[in-house]
Length: 342
Ligand code: 13P
Image 1 (cartoon, rainbow, N blue to C red):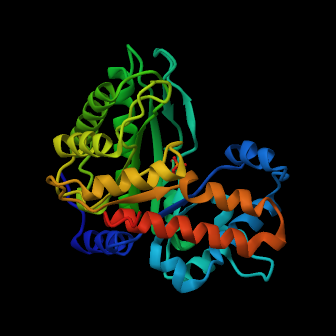
Image 2 (image 1 turned 90 degrees about the vertical axis):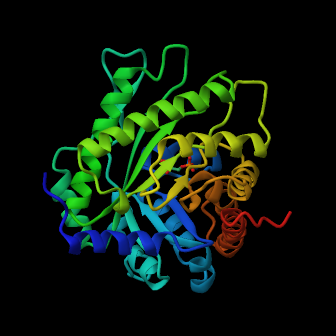
């Protein structure tokens, strides 16, 4: 098989290094217009292109040195890459001015996996290489693709695990060929009544099949980032596990399945409260045990919930919303070092 050129490997590693500086994490700001609908509705904000722009402009114009103290990269939605601020500056330029690496979500969303029981796969492989080459020209250096898995008595099924592992591997190898670092996101959803042991089992199965498949596709492990959910009990389970238990189970799942060649693992917040997303990340980093990878945050909701609410479409609230955002980012940063100041 053909190996990646040394210059390409170096380029990918350089991007990874910029993304995983100690004490920093990523902001997932790649919600599609349709996923912002409900959140904007709840706040009485009309879901227009201009309001989405204003919201992201608020986030990306946070004080330069403060922003880059905590955030190394931002995942964007296609629309945001081509939007300009009210002063006619590209939004992506605001990130560059802050030494923050712009990235792009390249999947086209979930579709039903026929033949399964309510499971999904993810679309978007068609023309992916051309799209990646264009995004690279337009200033993005990494990508994200999300597949989801549900936990029930019969799922995740072998079909869903094998199909999505192949989709993720194909995505990752295409991105690497276009000089972009892929964030590979097999998200195991926490919907359901299952206990944490079942979540551990599902993570082990999904991740072991994923890494076997990445190997088959010759994905360059040193030039990728893995994005996972924490191992938690289901939302509808009466037990809300304490941070030590979450840390132990999360680290166990990762130790058993993720090769040390992978340069970083980031977590999604996945509907945890802002507080839980911080204390659980802190416990994971404070946990004593073998952890050959930096473990940091790549949060959407847990970084944005309070800032979005504070902003609520009101231009006079921009500074307040930015302060709230920075406070969440600061706490996540401390947690990524296992140094949360309670
Ligand atoms: P949450 O942190 O809101 O789960 O989102 C992260 C993400 O990017 C999911 O793909």
